[in-house]
Length: 263
Image 1 (cartoon, rainbow, N blue to C red):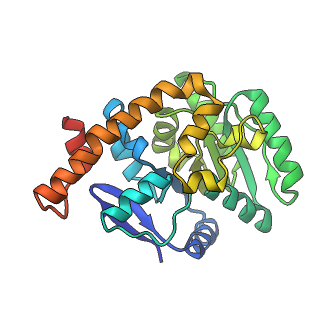
Image 2 (cartoon, rainbow, N blue to C red; image 1 turned 90 degrees about the vertical axis):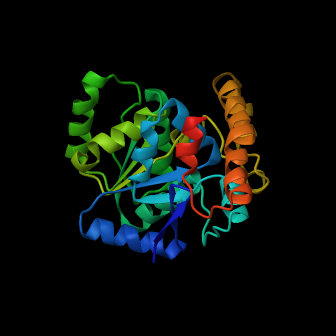
């Protein structure tokens, strides 16, 4: 059974992996729609630049612990999760599920050439999946409804969205009920990984908490300064806020995001 925890104002799902499979079965059988998203400490820092993301993300259905540091943060604050699974890993798990159950998948995001290559790779690796024509991630607001209409007509069981923040979150929040798809996963850079353009972090790198540096090495121009700022915000704001409220004020419940946004 999937439970929703309140980690200092952040909705975090607590579950076993079998619970996710059961959720998928129910969602598809009843033709419902769910959104799977991943929390990380770094992502909290983006709420300062895009405060609407807090409300958007907390509205999603399954919120996994996406990042070793966030798992450490939860453990240190007595929130012990049954399962820690990253968005890349849950994406791969979802592909395996789709292959077993002969489902339809659509990739939405990345450059057209990368999207096409990812689709080609998936067709070879997962022969039982129907890989629908992909949609690249470069569009403007006037094209949104056309994209929604196309996705709705294709009726994918699983939609992987690999476009930048906050566009992907805003898109899902705005159009979730119109997309005519069952499982929506904003999957970050996974379309790049599926195409072979970038590599997923090895398991030992994730366990040591070095997934972010591994990504920065692959795309330094795009990621270095953003993640440097994130690290600064985590060390000098998010962690001190947590310690002050929990240790000094002895509060068991407080809203980390609200206090962070006031800093």
